Length: 184
Image (tube, rainbow, N blue to C red; front, side, top):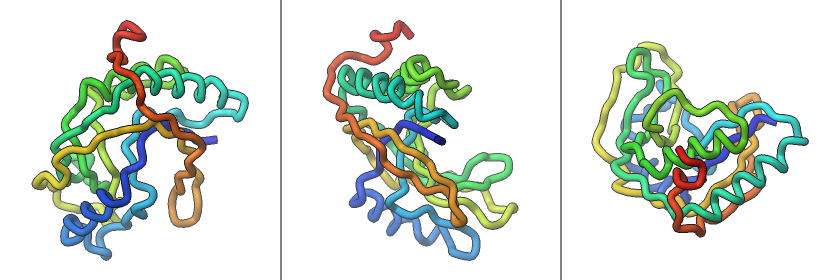
């Protein structure tokens, strides 16, 4: 199973962002992700056997229980990567709390953490159909967004791209900084 942990974007926020970014995502240039698939990834776990689900679930449940809701801010429309843009994102400024959660989840699930520090939260809106897309570093489209839960997603590859199936949710109910828990 191809797995990741993150938070789904609330549909009301997704619709607002879609309405505000549509002029920048023309159909002939972009293959848009369905709103129901929009999410903020906390950690990409990758391919795992079903037997590892209990370890992942235990790690997610524990970390969600000690983590307070996380606020990410200043989400702006941008293309990534900068050199050869192939994706349209809403990229937020790094959040120390989300970076700490990312590292803690990597440690507890045996996953490889991102090489980027701090960890850059983002929503993938679309992938480009063309290779020579002009780099965009646009205005903010989301002032702030609160992440209230951690969700385990299974990514299923299909003929029209990946579909993300929700396997389980855990609310962020704690008050402890994540980095204190694992000594990061």
